Length: 522
Ligand SMILES: *[C@@H]1O[C@H](CO)[C@@H](O)[C@H](O)[C@H]1NC(C)=O
Ligand SMILES: *[C@@H]1O[C@H](CO)[C@@H](O)[C@H](O)[C@H]1NC(C)=O
Ligand SMILES: *[C@@H]1O[C@H](CO)[C@@H](O)[C@H](O)[C@H]1NC(C)=O
Ligand SMILES: *[C@@H]1O[C@H](CO)[C@@H](O)[C@H](O)[C@H]1NC(C)=O
Ligand SMILES: *[C@@H]1O[C@H](CO)[C@@H](O)[C@H](O)[C@H]1NC(C)=O
Ligand SMILES: *[C@@H]1O[C@H](CO)[C@@H](O)[C@H](O)[C@H]1NC(C)=O
Image 1 (spheres, protein in one colour):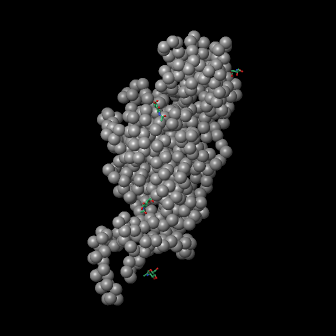
Image 2 (cartoon, rainbow, N blue to C red):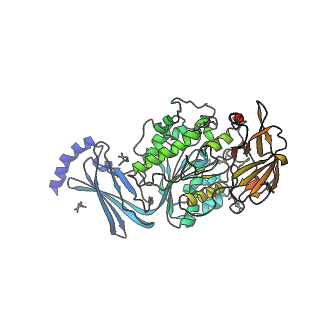
Image 3 (cartoon, rainbow, N blue to C red):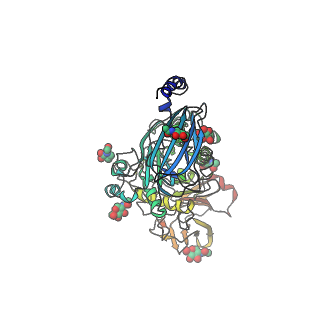
């Protein structure tokens, strides 16, 4: 046994110079570990890691000591990385994944166990995504409710920023784990996201197969930090846009979180992404958000598709939470209605032409005046996640169900009656009368004013607004266009069976004098 050791003694130091260490250098990517969930069929899961340049790497998938498949690749020069795409695997498990690097006459073997195949979702955003289960309503019972969800696995990426796109994560706070009271209830704004967890849990209730959840969020961060240089350039975002320091709590520099917390994940095969962000843009590049958000969605899609060798769908499902209501001293007149609108690329609904294959959870009626974390952080995350999961079931899984509240399809001015009739896309339930929540833009020669339009009569799918207060030209109508449109679950309009709220909207009334259009609805 002397000879091989001797050979090694000669060969290894040479290799050590190229790589830091042959032994230590051979590893899986930071987020490939025991208990993980890999994306199931029809996609192929990507397994990758680092090794010694030129070495052969064999990846083996085993179940009950039996080899299911083997993939062979070699470690690339320069990047010292290797990557294999597994053949599509049906949902289930557990499996063991083994990677062997053959270098000279020595094998280096890595193993991870209890690996499941299912759907992998990435969850990102700012503090409302970062809030943990211990911070939400009914925390105690939600935290004790994990036994049935042992195949929903969670991972939480550490807070980290970088000036350049990183290939792998600098650190993982919570490595792939089964859900427990400890890792879900770890503290305030640390470890696992409550929205992410609850979303995965609701999905698991219907999918009945494993779900993998990666949470990568940072409180108080604008979209610019999560965007690549490409998307910011496409939207004309100033490179040195400085955020007012009173608003800043997390990093706000362009691309720094994209670089460190998202880009490193791009080679992983994903099912989709959910996103809860926008508060930090209410007063920062707000009017660019209708470009920066659709651009982020597009850029993440392209990057994850390319990074996974085409395994992550090019237009993978992307869900987001439309911002809730909060009281903000810093922004008395909001900007919230505009951001909510911009989150939909100014359509008011998704999916739409600019944001295909997206879904949205409306949250303006989930306000929480008394949240101990400030009204910016409402504690009802169950309803947020529930609404999101309805969107996912419809958009990502093709279920035929209502996932969006009613919006007007037809707007008719019945001038002689002083009524504006809104015909909705779906049945409406008038939960509460509110004579201020609808407003009309009423224009005389050179001036337009928003006036309240009281709710008059309604039927299953139509609502008539009283517009008698406008004696001039009626140009536009809007709904819930305020920072705080209603109290908790008390907005005026819902869909009757799904209890989804009618989203906020602003719309021009056509058949009007054209010259007025440019002056309103800003
Ligand atoms: C090392 O890998 C080679 C090729 O797969 C195999 O033939 C050999 O048995 C392995 N040796 C050990 C010690 O695992
Ligand atoms: C989380 O915040 C709440 C409300 O401010 C506080 O009571 C609690 O002690 C905090 N928990 C931790 C672990 O810091
Ligand atoms: C975005 O919104 C701003 C402000 O309302 C508007 O001026 C601009 O045209 C919109 N841009 C896009 C791309 O929709
Ligand atoms: C990740 O994907 C990109 C794009 O395909 C590729 O250039 C890079 O080498 C991949 N990383 C690894 C570790 O294979
Ligand atoms: C909290 O639990 C109560 C009692 O089960 C329930 O009525 C309420 O809807 C729950 N709240 C949330 C936000 O889930
Ligand atoms: C306008 O709306 C009211 C109340 O929903 C309805 O009774 C009436 O038929 C509508 N009128 C027209 C012309 O659609």
